[in-house]
Image (cartoon, rainbow, N blue to C red):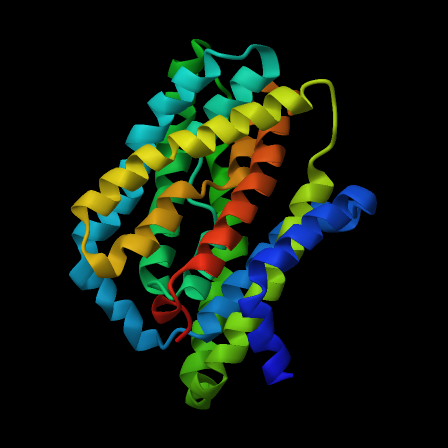
Length: 298
């Protein structure tokens, strides 16, 4: 079992591509509708591999944490507005929602797979969700030129259930059972499997409609534009934090974007977030898979 799990981490990218292709042939509405459970499982598995003492390290990385929370929000919101001008209707609205979305929860697991700082990634996910919930609706309304009715409490409740509870459970179990350290490689492999299932779920939920081609193009352009704050981070940060920051900044939470788009503009605007989720997870899997061997694993 240990050997199989370790192999899963090494084969993350091809497995993710197979999962995406399989979802086109045999999609699963059940998995698509319960992707938050998969994200919670990913956070739990990741937390099991984190010694609680490592959380203290966040005190020494306040500047890096602030940068990972503020940089993408300040850069991606205006970049999303520029991209949205190329489209119309629900696609335009969906791109705007991506611009104010928080860091993808799955980024924590992908950072672990790539050998980055999971603690810093967890801190960034927390801070960006709070910022997105509090400032996102107002910024979205300003960018869209109309009132956007978004329930911030719903986003915070989702964050509590998907991140905080499994995180606390995982850290608690790791503190009670220190010998779990010997299973770190297996936990990384298990994270890879959950990411693969997430890709399948995201692809299953990307329902086709007349705007699918435009949504795919808009999502791709947004991913390219996301490289702008990533390049700024790579230039300003230390070598040890570059990989972690690149994943945290590049990967936006498609579920949060879908919730923002639906509440503000209607369900049709969520199509962009669904397509983006597939592309984003595949990109994250590729980054984790292709990270230099010395930077991967524990």
